[in-house]
Length: 288
Image 1 (tube, rainbow, N blue to C red):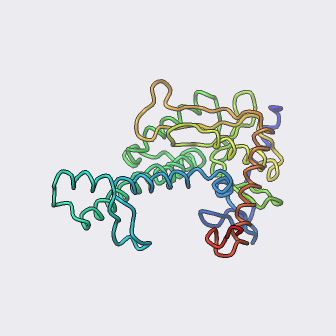
Image 2: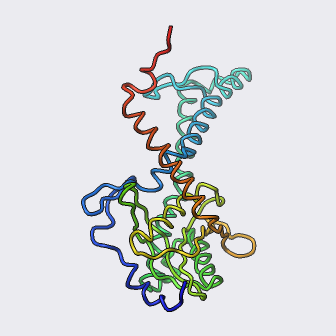
Image 3: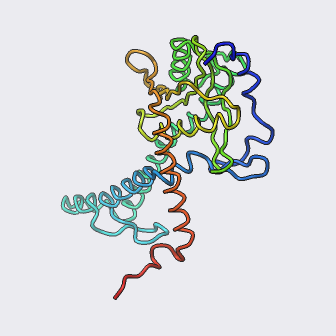
């Protein structure tokens, strides 16, 4: 990108009137409803559902299945109950077993929510530091976030990136989808850079689908097309060996965007099928 265009960035990248607004599944922009990019991907690439299913199956095997939807008791046959029965331990009653299962489910839910909650706090803090130029005293930073904040700052320095905007909302008027870009800036070569912070266990293929959508939506709002896009994985709690960050570079944007559209249409189709199928799967019958 022509370095002479750099002064245009600050004027072009501004949050337009009416954006953002909404809830965790959608945005309301100028009175219109736009579904979040992450929501669309969740429907088209439903990995979280498989994970939750696996958790439930594991608990069924260990503790026994619930007897009803109210989760008031568990059925016999779970591995733990069978093991204790064979050991002639009369202290593990059905009530105790039920309590143990609910306790384990609570621990798993609490543990699973930690990265997301810290991620929200971390995004807000990085926005405050990068865009508002605020100097946040170290004593005010959540200790669990410290490695991520240091990693983000180090990555920007190492890659020579000057942030222009953070938490920037973009949308697609025809697909009715929207999302929030974590960061936009330019490097020392004058290239426009887009990035997405991740505090996950790794960098996964589906993350590029989200990033590709942002790369496509940004020009629709600003007229500026990113030259490079990165996924920047930051430490959750433990510091990485070597640089305090891991980086994923966006592959061919057209190919990844095409894959996103496949996921979009699959998710849309499955939602329409669900909405038009009265009573869900239970209502379907086989031919006699």
